[in-house]
Image 1: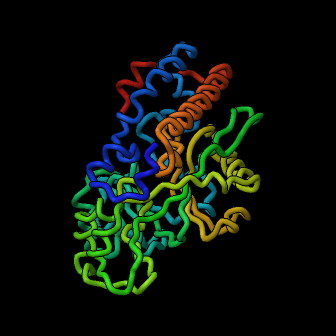
Image 2: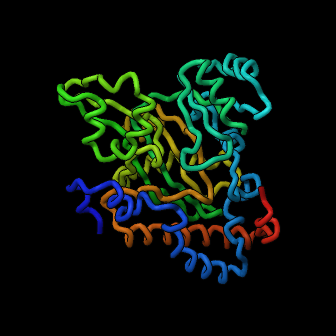
Amino acid sequence: MFAFLNNMKPPILFIRIFRFEYWPTYIIYFPVVFYWTYLALRSRSLTFFTAVNPGFKKVGFLRESKIDILKKIPKKYLPKTAFVSKADGLNDVRKYLKQQKITFPFICKPNIGERGLHVEIIKNYDSLNNYLLAHEEDFLIQEYIPYEIELGIFFYQLPDRTELGISSIVEKEFLHVIGDGKSTIETLMQHTRRAKMQKKRMANIFKNKLDYIPKNGEKFVLEPIGNHCRGTMFLDANHLNDPRLLDTFSNIAKNIDGFNFGRFDIRTSSINDLYEGKAFKILEVNGIWSEPAHIYDPSYSLWKAYKEILKHHKIMYRISKMNHLNNIPYMSLKDALTYH
């Protein structure tokens, strides 16, 4: 519906209004509430979704602990990771870095958080101390994985494993500009739509590099963190689906007790390496609130996106129903409404 915008240079406000990838989540998902209500009626429970991933603490309802989930994954697939309590100070963090052999640069991210909020690359102790002072919450320190390919791989399985599959693959194209050998970073950002929409934030980050002139054809990455709110373009990568991929992630899922539905966010050195089950790292696993993020591909229509969202909700319902028949309880509505 909005694919024509890819070949135009409309005003930023126009883009934000007519491209649903920029809409607030509550607006996108408002129509889905009606289908959700239908599934709840069929389940006879407004909290039917809480039986989907019973192995997650509080069944993964709203505030999923990243470290609790990562602990369930074989270490060979994980970046070096340390948990930092909100009560810890700089000296404690130094100790954790030494214990885990994590060096600069590394990633700091909230232990409980969504959509890239408060995720930062830390390059020195000054920026680490600033992060500690600015964020009074538990967070993770994770080694920076320099692999260029970042994917979100949505895996699901029925509890008896009679049906399983990869239902969505999204590739994340990091925010960047391409040099022409003449223009500065600042000028290139002004003439690159996605970068222009992030210009104020980027200007603050690259204030000492705005006058740099990339070589002709040089790709200058502005944001190496693959989150939509940071300008990353989400691309439909379902063409990468392959039986070898399903084998790899179904075997990983076997190690995660009570996990049936969610998205693995990974980085890999190449697609061939990924197919062979090597040279990739799992950055995090998102549970029942995972999105089939390929729907945010600029070529996707809103109608097509809704079809994908409803398809995934139906899968969630089927998993929940089977678990409930196997004596997995739904969380009570009271517990769900008061859960923190």
